[in-house]
Image (cartoon, rainbow, N blue to C red; front, top):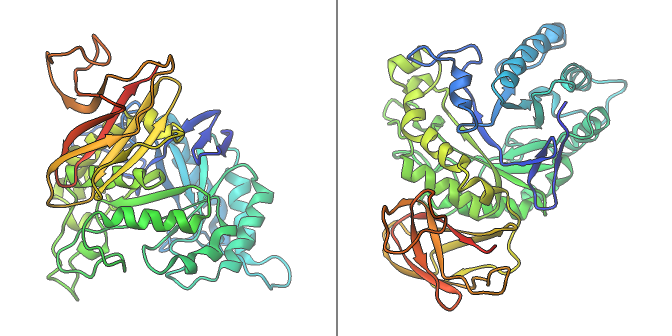
Amino acid sequence: MPATGLDANGCLILNGERVFPLILSDAPPSDGKTPDGKDAWAEVANSDLGANFVRSGRTLAKPWALTQIDAQIAEERLRMDTARANGLHCWLRLVNAANLPTSTAGVSEPEQLLEKIVGGLKDHAALAVYKGADEPAHGNTAPAGLIHAYQKLKTLDPDRPIVITQAPLGPVGDLVPYRPAFDVTGADIYPLSYGHPHASDLPNRDISVVGDVTKKMVNAAGGKPVWMTLQIAWSGILPTHDDPDRVPRFPSLPELRFMAYQAIVNGARGLAFFGGQYTQVMRPRDAATGWNWTFWQLVLRPLLEELNSPTVWPALLAPPAQHAVTSSAADVEVLTRKDANRLYVIAIRRSATKTDQVHFSGLPHKNNGNPLTVGDVAFEYAQDPPSPPVDPGKQRFRYVRVANVGFTDWLGPHDARVYRFNIA
């Protein structure tokens, strides 16, 4: 089993290494194929360029059952074997074993289920994290039973975290009572639809509501980590017999990239991507495989390749910088991270319409005391620039000049930028 934990900055630790979870929720079928016949999970893992987690386990429609538990555990172990073979970790749904009665004589059925699930799977190397009750506050699930389940789980498997994902609804005060029931929390937020009631009850109707919900969950978490679940597809875009006028709507790559970075800027230490399994709104060739490979190719894979890159990945894991960089624009949110050799500044523009130059101030000096003079902009290329790049001989990212511990750059609507500065 992997040695699992959380560090002081909320990073997940697996086998001694910090990991930023990039979760498929749900993933393709574990025995599935892509439309061109490739192994599905090998494709989504893709040698550390794709996802690193899959949500696994039973579902509400097909929950854990004592009469079938041995077969269900055996089935899950096979799924975990496939995950392990492809370098993927599993986020295991406890479903009906995530809420234990608090006043029952003897051992209740959910508690028996929890004991058997954990006992049968905790030794598997692919199991990394448990998924507790889904959207419990919105579903009026009382915290007491979830707290009881958390306490029981910690006696069975004390090292692995449990995550509770809330709906993007309700005030922080309604979420605070759930703190004793989780190690990690978060919310699912799906802001894109045509005419369907918005997925959040916050007044913001722009995709920048992702940042607002993330901040709310950070407040609700009380210092515990937050993982956010972002949109591929969701029920509000699925045409039904009762509502045939619903029109499918998916995020574009710029939209999903903005939402991912905005969640990170506002405190997310992990991201899940939900809805790739909705065959109702897929191309027929994708529906035949059970997963939205078109969205994967056009949107999700390019985003995951960027997040997994040697350029961006260290920024996702680095601790906060001692002194935060600030921007001159009220609609530009900034996150400052620092490791031994680099300073990372992630900036996003909330506005859907504004374009102008933004000044960033508060950069530190190098470790040797000399001032910074240049930084680069991840995945924005400038071949043969008029000044040497930050890493000569490597990728020629566009650079920004630094003067008086600051720099200026253009930002347009919903831009997301990752700036790097060599402080060694």
